[in-house]
Amino acid sequence: MQKTIFWVSLVGLFLQWDNVGAFHDDVYQPRVPIELIEELQDIDNPYPATPERIELGKQIFYGKGLCVTCHSENGKGLKRPGHPPRDFTDKKWQEIRTDGEMMWVLRNGSPGTEMPVRVGKVINEEEGWSVIHFIRTLMDKE
Ligand code: HEC
Image (tube, rainbow, N blue to C red; front, side):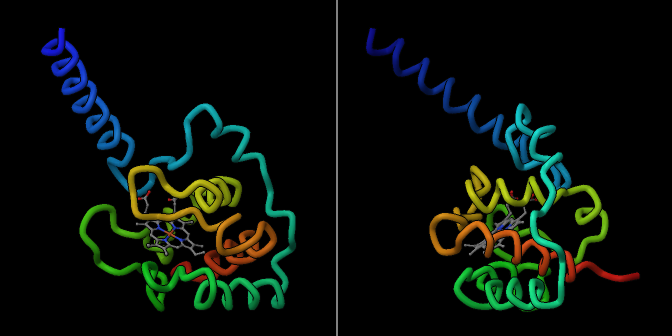
C-alpha cells in the first residue's frame, strides 16, 4: 500500500513538472489560468494614461513595488536562473499581453516563477494599474 502511494505521488510530481514546463514554453504564452483569459482580456485599465499617472507608475516601479530589482532599470530584466523576468521592451509581447492579464499577475504572481504577488501586498489596485501604464512606456519604439 505504502509503495503504491509512493509511486502515485512520484508520477503526480512528474506530471506537475511537465505541466509547468508546458505552461511556460515561451514568453508569449498566457500567464493566467486559461479559463479566465477571455474575461481578463476584456478588462480595461480604469485609469487614463495621463503623464501624472505614468509618473506615479514609474515611482512604483523604481520604488516601493521593487519591480526594478528583477525587471532592471531599462525593463529588459536581469539575467537570473530559472524563469527570466519578462523583457518589457519586447514589442511583440507588449502587443499580445493585455492590461487585464498583467493585473492578474500583479494580484497572483506568476505561478511556478519568481514573479511575486504585488497588488494587495506592497502596492494597492490603483498603484497596480499605474505601474502597468508605466510598463507600456518601456516598449521599444521602432
Ligand atoms: C523577485 C523578482 C521580481 C519582482 C520583485 C517583480 N517581478 Fe515581475 N516578473 C518576474 C519574473 C521572474 C517574471 C517572469 C514570469 C513568467 O515567466 O511567467 C515576471 C513577470 C512579470 C510580468 C509579465 C507576466 C506576463 O504576463 O507575461 C509583469 C507584468 C510583471 N512581472 C510586473 C511586475 C511589476 C509591475 C513588479 C513590481 C510592482 C514586478 N513585476 C516585480 C520577477 C519579478
